Structure formats: C-alpha cells, structure tokens
Length: 629
Image (cartoon, rainbow, N blue to C red; front, side, top):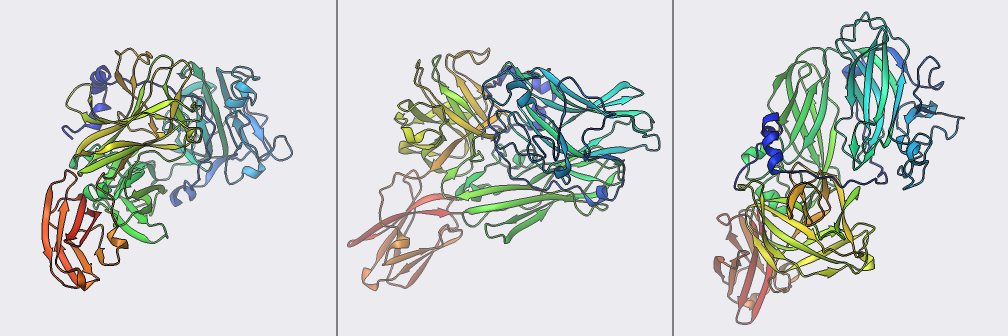
C-alpha cells in the first residue's frame, strides 16, 4: 500500500470534516427479510450473576397494570394469549417470526413490533398497518426505589432488529425526564442481535440514589430516517433485573482477526477481516487478533488481557495466544492485540474464540468468529445475502466494488458475485480489476483488466456467477479491488447481494448517471454493507497432469515452506530438469535431478506466493502449481 490510513484519526471530529470532502457515503438500503442468526450465549460474567437483583420483572403475568404504555403499544407474548409466547414479530419481513430466547421466554415476554404495526404483515404494504410509521413505542415502569445505591446496572435479555428504528432506555426522577441511554447502538441497518443476547445498561449517576425512579423502554421510530423510511423492525425484551453494579465487571465489545484497530500499522494493508482468505495471503500476512474490552464495573480493573483460541473443523485446538496486561479505569474501553499471529498450515474452517481476563475477573463473555482458509478464493462477505445494491438501472450502468489487501504476488483469474433475486435473465454483466491509489484524494481506482460481458441466465438469479479474466492478470502487493458493472437499460436490470457490514471506505459504488449523491459523474461513494463480490486467484499456464496424480513423480509438501521434495518413482526417467517460474514467467530456480529416489530442493530464498513448477527431459514433461509459504 502506498500510504496507511490512520483509522482513529479519520474518526475524530477534525479529520471527519476533511474526510467528508473527499469521501462520501450513499445508502441504497432496502427492507430485507430476516435471516435467523445462529445464536451464541452472550454470557454474563460470574461477577454479575453473583450480584443479586433488588428489582426484577419477567412478565409472567403480562405487562404490569401499573406501567404506562404508549398509543402504539408494547405488546405481551405469553401462554394462552394469541399469538402466544412462541411467536416473535408478525411483520412482513420477520420471516420465521422467531421469538426471543430468554431464560423465561415460555412464560411471556414483551415486544414492540414496528414492522407489523406499519404493514400489517403484508410485504410492500407500507403505511397500511394499525399504527403506521413514524411511531414511538414507550413503556414506562412504576416507581423504583434506588435510594440505597450509588451504582446500578440494568440487565435484560434483548432481541432487536432495525432498519431505521432505535432502542433507548429513558430514566425519570420524580416524574421528570432525566437522561437517555441507547441500547444496541452497534447494530447496523438490516442487522439484528442474537436471539439470546443479554444487554447491560449502566444507570446514569444522576439517577441512582433517588427513591422515585422510572425506566422507560423506547423504540424510537420517528427521528432516524433512511431512504425516506423511519422505524422498522422490532424490539423484544424479557427478564429485567436491576442490581448494584459489581465492583469488577469485564465486558467484551468487539473483535476482529485482521488488525483493523491496532495491528494494521505493522503491515502494508488496511487490516480488513476476510471471511475467505487464500493460503498464500495468509502466509504473507497471518491472522492477527484484536479484542475491544470495556470496564463495566464500579472499580478499576488491573491485569486485563485478551485471550484467543482457535479450533479446526474437527474441534481440535490449533492455536492460542494472549495480549500484554494493562489497567482499565471505570467506564473505559481499550483494544488489545494478541502477541502472536497465526498462519494456518492447511485450508479449512477455523473457529475463533475471544475473551478477556483480569486479576479480579476470571473470564468475560466470549465472542466467537469463523474464518475460512481457501486455495484461491478471497472474500469479505458472510455467504448469506442480507440486502443488495442495484447495478444496472435505467438511469445508468453503475459499478459495485470491494477492496482487497494483497500481500504477495498473485494472478487474478476471475471474479465471483452473488446476483440479487430480482435480476433479469439476459442482462449483461462484467467484472473489472482495479489498483487502488490511496495517495490521491479521493482515492483513485486504476483499471487493470476487464472481463468479457456475460449475459445472465435463469439459473444465475439468486445465485453465484463467475467471470473470468482472459488472460489472468498479475498483481503485486498493495490494495486492489474487484468491481461488478452493468449498463443503462430501461428494462434489463440486475443487482448484487450484500452480506454483513463493511469497514469504512472498503466497499464502494460508482455513480454513472443516477445522481446517488452530490458528487460528479463517475464518483465512487463508500457504502456500509459488504457486496458479495470475491476475488479468485489462479493461472493461465497450460493445464497438465498434476504431479500428485502422476504415477512417476511425487512432490511434497505443497504448500512448501523451506524445502520441497521430489520423489522419482520410476528409475527409467533418467535425468530431469526442474524449473520454477513466478507468475510473471520469470525463472526463479533451475536444478538438475539425477537418478535418485528423493531429491530435496531448497526454496527458502524464494518469496512467498504461487509458482509454476516444470519437470522435463527429452521423453517426459509435466507442469503444476505450487505454493511457497
């Protein structure tokens, strides 16, 4: 990369003023059907469990009659009262109507169903429901005595999904509004918490110590507007508990395996998380692990460190590490970087667990992530569509793009994209490979190669397509990008699906005549969701018999690190010439192999990457790809 991005500076107030002049964001978010998340127990630490609640509500008998509900009301889901405790949202975009997975969900919970209130369960019927958007759901408790306490935490099970809606807890003292705390502020548009999520809300210090306190649970569906829509989708809560804040409480906030917050500074890349990562790129830039931790307790925490453990696909631990220790003061957060990186030896699925410990806390809750090491696929998406961007429009042919860190020499053979479900067969699609120049402001995207046009087939809709670069294109370390483009047409259209949130600046859409924002024609706006666009590595070298399948020769290991073994299984082959070429065709190694059973070749001086290995004599010739780590 020609210049590193100081991410924390970009997020500061001063830098953001300058930043907005050179990088603009657009939103094309649409309502999506809910994708059920595989839940994990967002465990509350043992310290919090040991702090007995002085007030609680599990809604076993419904919403207390002494509480005050809004015109657009919070609703009770419980046994014997339709639709029952087994039903969550009834809105058009709730899919399976999954309920909250709280410990006492079977005896009842409450929901503000913004989705249902606006469309009455009918997709596209916006504004036809009994309490259409914009609306506010405000449920206020009766008086609670907090006079004996100086520090209080609210714990609750909370299942929340949003388009433009926001979740808050408001606090009242003697009937007067005092303060507001936002819940789940990290949940992006069209995203959701886990069904069994536990939320912790620190009661403001201006509230504790008073005898007449009320809590109000607010689904705010008026003030935040996205693409002319407010509100949507829902908020379910259950098992509310107020307790004295434990002296020591450690909470995990976020995690990554790319080094986005801290570790990127020691590399030539951005520190992006890759869900699919080729073995060669992992070898050149091993996984680095970061965990953001918060001190949610009433006292400073000493000896805090993050811990990480990785299991392979069969559940065996293959790596563990931890960070240096520090002290974290009350209500402060910090990002910790593990002291060791991890370079997987083989392709496969890897499950990553992150947690924190301190002198006073045995373990925080655990964040779990998954990453896949591949032979040739480079991807940032999660594999399951949660939205889309329309590319071919009547106003113009746009391009949708993902940026990729390249750490070692490669050949880009093709691009893959997941085509949105409304796309029309027969619509032409193409892919473009770019180099990204970060020294310019705004960044420049320099075209390197483009595929032939491909007309979508019926089987491509809501499915993956692959677009080949002919020939494959050599790229070198530094930021590159893959874009999917289309053409303006009054009827033919297609879109590319999105999956997961995008790191700031790392995904873009080029406005070619559709006036997405205020910038000029051809401007690249950054977007907040990750397009399902992947970069594929490979070569255009002639295909030949693979050495692994050849009856006369065997090569191992592949990938190789310091040495490569060539085993001659047929003594009649005689002398053989071994040549290794890099992806540009340059000869990097030449050796002669006499009649011997096994020949060990030193490759420690060769840079990491993909290479072509050739073995030949006057009667025999074969080629295959090898990887050097």
